[in-house]
Each structure stands twice: as structure tokens, then as C-alpha cells.
Amino acid sequence: MKRAKLTGFVSWILNQTSWCVFLIFCVGTEMTDSQLMGEFECDIKDLEADSWSGTVDKKFLKALKKDEIKRQDIIYELYQTEVHHVRTLKIMSEVYFKGLQKELQLDIQTLDKIFPVLDELVEIHTHFLTLLLERKRASSAEAQNGNRFLINDVGDILLNQFSGCKSDRMKKVYGKFCSRHNEAVNLYKDLLAKDKRFQAFIKRIMSSSIVRRLSIPECILLVTQRITKYPVLIQRILQHTKDEDHSCVSEALRCIKELIMTVDNKVNEHEKKRRLKEVYRYSILTTCHMVL
View 1 (cartoon, rainbow, N blue to C red):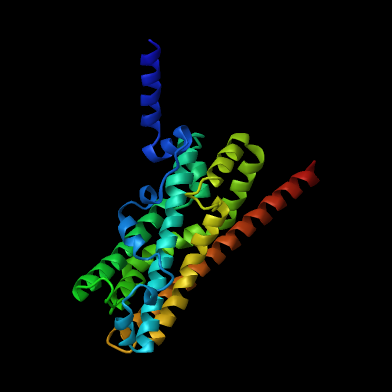
View 2 (cartoon, helix red, strand yellow):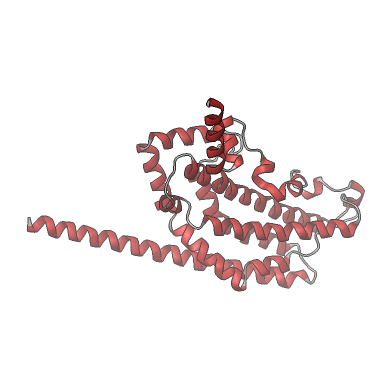
């Protein structure tokens, strides 16, 4: 009888919680990077060095012009930072969102306020990273030597990501996420101050190596800042690009700047509406007080 009850309890736990989250909360075994990053794990291992020039054959490196070496190092930095961004989004999604939903049974409305449009952000950037990594693998295969490869073209991928319907989607998604930055952080702080179960959850997760002490507010800030990092990287790539890729990189730079401007406008518009609501609410309260 006891065994049957125990089996039923374990079955219930597994039905309620994903395996990775179950490992963290119930068994004490932490989720690993390979579980968190899934299909990207093998490619990520090739991006652990400090720079591209630190990964390639030294004789091959000496045969290249300094301008090309610099360009490859910047492209490598683009790859690394996009991996970090996807990792941050995965921490928000797989660890925080799912953990709060499953362990604390936090309602979806509250979760969506803390992590607005999170699913869309994960989808956008996992797809972008997939395209970047596919180009890297293709370049490596063409070279027939993992230590002697160049990523010749990235302009087409960048332009595809930051123009057209993909750009429209990013404007909409980042406009919503960035506009709700303050509300999300304030709600998090409110829960942390008032809910002891929430406090215990955050404390336990923050001690886990998988999150690398990235709190929810820090994750939100990093995601908010990400699109502002692209122009700097793309501008630096452009400075060291002289071939046919130059026009695509140049146009991608123009597009990402326009994207950021649109997001800024959406944030400003949201803030104006929020202030108007506050003024209206204050005027109603003042009127009621005067009547009383």
C-alpha cells in the first residue's frame, strides 16, 4: 500500500513538472548546461575561447591580413553574445517561469506580467542563433579543417533578421517587453517582499550554478539591453568588411537602428499612457476626497 502511494506521488510529480525542473527541486540534482541549451550544446563548446584568433591554426593566422583577423574576432563576439542572450532567455523560461508555475502554482497572468512575451523572445533568438551556427558549420566544412576556417558572409543573415517581417515582429515583441520592464521588476519586488514561498524559491534558485547568480531583474535588464548591443557589433564588423558582404552589413546596420528607434517610441508611448492613467486616478481620488 505504501509503495503504491509513493509510486502514485512520483507519477503525479512527473506529470506536474518537467524532468529538468523535477531534478532541481525534488532530487537536488541541478540542471546542466546541456539540458538548458539542448540542441546548441555541441556548437557552444566551439565558442568557449576568448576570441576567434585563439581557436585557429597559428600558421593559418599568420597568412591573414590584420583586418580580416579583426573582422573574424568581431563576428565571433557576435556569436558568443547571442549564445549568452539565448542562455539568459532559457534561464528565464526553463528555470524561473516553469519553476514558479509548477512549484508555486503562480497563475499565468502574473507570470506573463513578470516575463512578458517570453515565448516569442525565445523563438526569435533561437532561430537567429540557429542560422548563425549553420553558417559557421558550413564555413568550417568548406575549409575541411576545423582550425582553418573563415566565416566569410554574415550580412545576409543580419539583414534577414533585422528587416522585413522579422523586423516587424522584433519591434512588436521588444516594444512590449521593454515597455513593461519597470512593471515586471516592481511586481517581482512586491512578491519577494510579501510572499515567503516566493522568497524561498528565489533563494534556492540563486544558489544553483545553472543560473550563475542571475536574478530575475538582472535577466530582464539583460534582455532589454540586448538590441542596443547589435549596432555596435555590426558597425565594428562593417569597418572591417570590404567585399560584397559590405552592402548587406551596411543595410543591416541601418535596419537595426530603425528597429531600436521604433522600440524606443513604443516605450515612450507606453510611459505617457501610464502617466496619464496615474494623473486621472489621482484626480478621481482628489475629487472624491473633496466631495466627502
